[in-house]
Image (cartoon, rainbow, N blue to C red):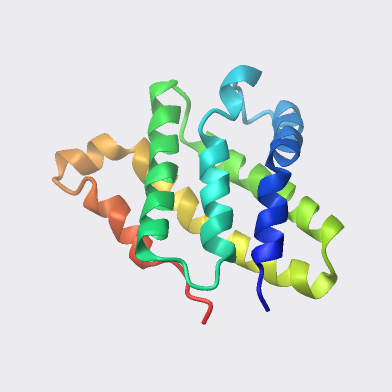
Length: 159
C-alpha cells in the first residue's frame, strides 16, 4: 500500500499540524520556548520526516538530509540555551500532532501503517537531534559529523 497520499496530505496541512503542535507546546511545562522560537526549523525536520518515513524506498540522500536537518535542530536548541530534554518533548508533541491528523483523515489500516512508520522514523530523528545538541562532545572525540551521518544507514526499511 502506497502511503504517498498520506505524505502529500500531511505536507499540504503542515501549517495546521504545526499550529496544533504550537498549542500543545504552550500547555506543556517542559517546553519553555517563546512562541516565535518554537517551530523555527522544526517544519523542515517534520517535512523531511514525512518524506522519508512514508516513501516506499527513501534514497540514501533523503535519509542523510533528514538526519542532518534533525541534528541541526538539536544544535539550534543548544544555541538557544535550552536543556536537552526539550528535544524529547518536542518530538513527543510532533508525533501526537501527526498521529491526530493521520487518524482523523485516513482509514484505520492506512493510518496505522503511516503512524507506525512515522513513530519509528521520529525515533531516529530524535537521536539525530540529540547528537546535534551534543555535537561539541562528538566533535571533541573526532566523531562529528560521522556520528550523525551513520544514523541515515540505520533508517528502517519497509520493503
